[in-house]
Length: 269
Image 1 (cartoon, rainbow, N blue to C red):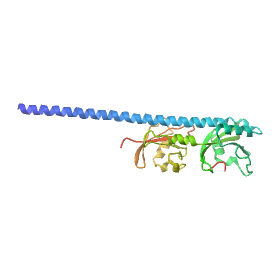
Image 2 (image 1 turned 90 degrees about the horizontal axis):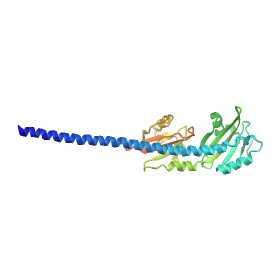
Image 3 (image 1 turned 180 degrees about the vertical axis):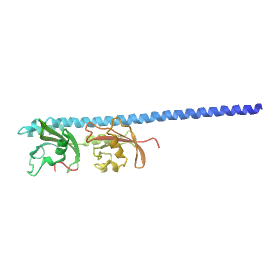
Image 4 (image 1 turned 120 degrees about the vertical axis):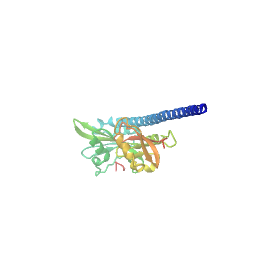
C-alpha cells in the first residue's frame, strides 16, 4: 500500500516537474519569438523610413532648384540662368516647355521646329498633377535619369513647364546598399509598380510582380499609413516585406525585403 502511494507521489512529482519545464520552455519560446518579430519589424521600419527620407530629401532639393526658375522662364531670355542652375545642381539638362509648343534647353541649342514639348511625358505629368512631379526614365545613352518637372501657373493659367534632368546614380547606390542580412534586398518602385532600382540591373523598369506576384499586395497596402511588414513568397522563399512612401510617393516607393526567420524612353526625344 505504502509502496503504491510512494510510486504515485513520485510519478506526480515527476509529471509536475516535466510540466513546469515544458511550460517554462514554451513561455520563453513565445516571448523570444514575439521579441524577435518586434525587432525585425523595427529594423525593417527604421531602414525603410531612413531610405525614404534620404530619397525624398534628394528629390525635394533638386526640385526646389528647378522651381526657383519659375519667374525666370517667363522672361524673354532665360538661357543664362538655366545654365547656372544646371551646373549648380549637377543636372544633365534644364529646360522649359511652353503651351505654344516652343521650348528651350541648356543642352539642346538647335531645337527642331517639329519638337512639341507639350506631348512629352514630363510636360503632361506636371500639367495633369498640377504640381511638381518626378518621372524616372532611361535616356538614349542608357543612363537612368529622372525628369523633375514643375508647372508654372500664374492666376490659374499654365504659363510653362520647367524640367530638370538628373542622374539617379546616387539613389540607385543608396538602394543597392541595403544589406543588413545576407538575404535582405532593397528596391525602388514607382507608382505604376515598375522597378526603378534593384541589385539586379536586369529588373530595371520591369513590373515588380515579375519578382513575385504577391508584390501587387505590397503596392496596394502601402497606400495606408502604418502598414505592417507583409509575408510574401519570393523565389520560393518566405520574405518579410516592408514598403515606405517617400515625399514624392507618386513616383518613388522604397521597398525592403528580409528573409523571414519563420519557416522609357528619353523624354527629350
